[in-house]
Image: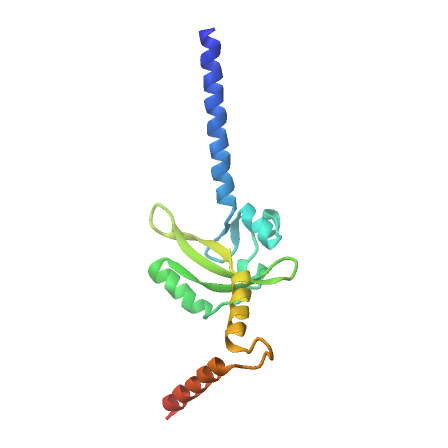
Amino acid sequence: FADVTALQKAKAQAQELAGKLQQQAQLLDLPLVFARDLNDRIIFWNHGAEKFYGYSAAEAVGQVSHELLCTGFPVSEDKIARQLKNVDKWHGELVHTKKNGQTISVNSQWVVAKNANMEPWAIVEVNTDISEQKIYKRELDHLLHHDPLTQLPNQLLLNEKVGHALLTAKITR
């Protein structure tokens, strides 16, 4: 009986550990993560990226990431490449296009992966969808700057525009 009890305890512990590992694996699939080689070809595409962008790993791996996602950059790609070379990371807001054609905004974090000789071999990209936040911000800005009844610009918007015009006029002198 002692052998059976020990076996049952070991089996229960193994099942508990397997459950914890499964939970951790699921957590890794939540973010939108992919990696690309130094030629920007995708070498890893996680389940979160599959679900969000609509491309399977088989469709994405081997593709140039910026072409697959029709990436819109906030600054030149050369400037981003220089920052990656100098500090091994970059972050900013990108515009991507999903497989279904929907355009979305993401907060993107890039990190250079290095081998044992400290030579770069890949770039890991972690993206967070901020499309809804941008919509809410536009709606909030509209509410702040327009009369709720007439939808005409309000005094706050007028003050901001006049202030900006005065600042621009001072700079151009």
